[in-house]
Length: 120
Image (cartoon, rainbow, N blue to C red; front, side, top):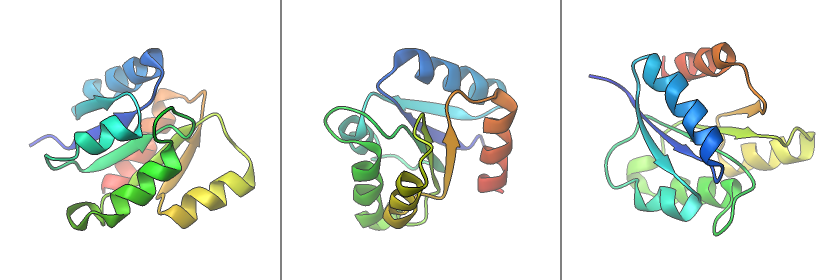
């Protein structure tokens, strides 16, 4: 059975690129436009969340904090996929519960390597 990945980004083109990359590798992809939308889609089980940092309504850090309070989602790996590369932002993400951090623009092979490593 294919692993399910929730990808969260307010940019349609980024969501599309991530979806194509992951779907081509055999993953099932669910898309959300921001953190609020993502939380509404966590009603069915997901194996991984890939989220942007800067989004309207609920940003990536807020999303991670919210996901980490949900009993069914505590162990889900969460990767930040963002243009932000400052160490302080990375530490903030890690403190919130992020598993990893990828800086945009990203290479598809880099994304797949991180996903495979995180999902085992």
